Image (tube, rainbow, N blue to C red):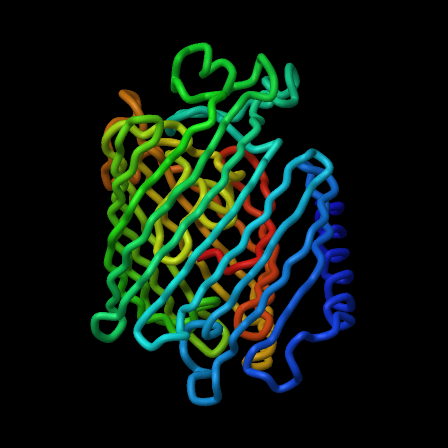
Length: 393
């Protein structure tokens, strides 16, 4: 934990002066600005990691500055490589307010995670320290993905929008050792695509009702989404239906609460690599467990066809300079479960066998869209920490 905190401080210390030294491409006072920072950090899973982030941002005008989107449009290039061999690069173009009534997004990403987590399928999957004593890589896999994703949203009336999009990717999940959990599942015939590269193509439509005051760090309002997906992977078709609701309520000038409930059901014959994604407008959640879903579980902890997720936050603003900087203390309680196979059954709204955990942390909100943070949480598998570069939900 101490090394993780030191690494985060190092990352902040390196990024701040370096960003100030880079000559700006666009002149001072321009509505278009560029921003960059290096990334340097350490994690117990991947070791030393270095990379960089660069963005070109079309800022709001004086007349539109108080709109919920953090900017009119942005193109962002992000990449990093770690000592473990894990690496990723992404290019994201997002225009939430460039054209009145329209939201456009196009993303390309290639990622190789050499120490990704895999704990088995279903809600009864376990993490047992004894297995890692036998083989340190027992719950680790090599997880590779190349993604192209696009989406368009059109405002119907008020905060109601319709969306349509596509998602094309090629993924591969392979064991790192012969005694790993994924290798055992492969030998047991759990999924025929383990160890193979698989093409996965899907299309989606949905409805979004968005009444948030701020998209990057909401304080009041609601966001409700209903999205249906048709897809095919490895010659097998599947469907994905996701419904989620988020609410934000200020109690005082400094205190606020927020909550989310989400459920996703999959039909057809989804392959193992298709089970990770939880659909959402603009940007999906990758995996159940981790910063964007269950903060008291490690990344990708729960994997199954159907998913149920809930979050409750209490937020206290420690320090604030409006539009410039906000330092927030967050306490959270997260609960989730998956349904997969005869032991877990089909999707249903239930409180039975939910994986519950809670904790707290600090989140720093810079300007309109930059987030840095750290949380610690205690869950069914012990204490976990997560770092953030976006608001949790």
